[in-house]
Image 1 (cartoon, rainbow, N blue to C red):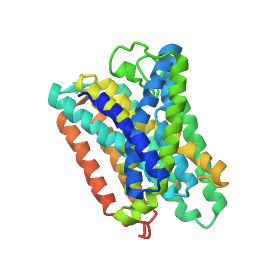
Image 2: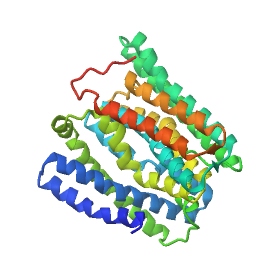
Image 3: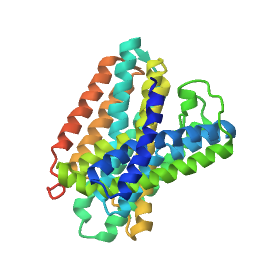
Length: 365
């Protein structure tokens, strides 16, 4: 049975989760079924976007992929903001970046390397993306590092996060524009699955695609609301911290369909596309999703989301980007490098698993 078919069969969890929510079942059951139900819906959003892209052309299609690539996770974080779970939101930002760079790229390099040996990709594009990643991490780290000096001035904290967010959005826009105007590069997060997997033949009309996109988005909204509503009970019952759920679980739920694409194309020895999917998605989260959430929080709560991360999160994200940059710069990969990335991911996951739950002290720089 193919992976795509397994993902489609997981649609059965959508009604199960909705029924569990309506019947006020055990929150752990609601959390698990909602998480499993979001996975196929996120995959359908990707498919619908690909169909629309097929009809509208590569440039508009690439822009659609760049903006809707993390739709499921964005919906989850917006509902988490509404529920006041800001630590969960910031953890999910970090989790998406390290998940794409360590878990996804690690699996792609490991499995692709075991099958094909040394795999090559464009070193110039990899170098540009590595530089963007380092700049993105610096932008995320600056408010955290400077917060110690301005923590008693709320207006300064808000101004710093808002200012950094605006710069990051502009930089993301420039990276997308550069990709559109220079041959051989792809917009950050805009690599389409039709390009990554097989030659694409349209199976839905634009109208059908838009309807599916709307229905699946609404489904994710309902399931995300159920999932977020169960988070506090899950953390209390299972002893997990919001950091572990945000860094490990939510990124897996929101992005697993995209993760599978990166691994599939690596197995087909299309390492260029695999790197573009994993690194592009991380860049999209760091340079677009994170700063956009600053202003979404401002609209929803009257105060912006402060881009202030704990020292644990900063260490995880800095280590991730440095290891990834060193691996990507030479323009070739092997299975051992994939094993290295996976090892770092497992170490980080274990560390956050044992991090104290809500009530524990999580220091900031």
